Image (cartoon, rainbow, N blue to C red; front, side, top):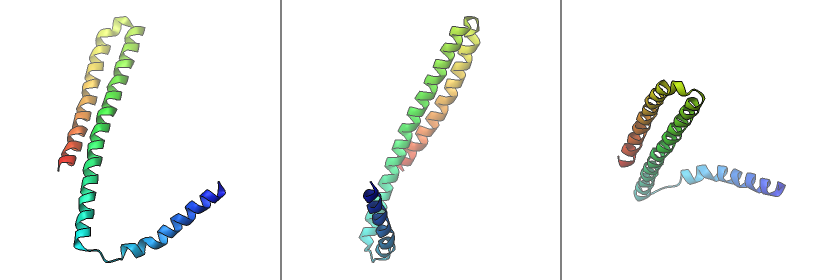
Length: 111
């Protein structure tokens, strides 16, 4: 275990020392264009993943809202009306925020 940690530290130190030398090397314009295209595609992919995570988060939030409302109604059945109204209102707010996040993520992915 100690040898593995030592090797990782040595590799990281070597990369830290060689990093500035590699950064100062001459690059052709085509390499710069390729790097820019790769960064652009990476950003688009991350934006699409972010949109998907927003949907997952919104789904989890609405599920927790429904769970809490059902537990509340089970404990006090006479309060089902106000609890249901508040549940729908809160779920709509979560859904609106989720939809906004998805639109922003997809616009970033398509731009």
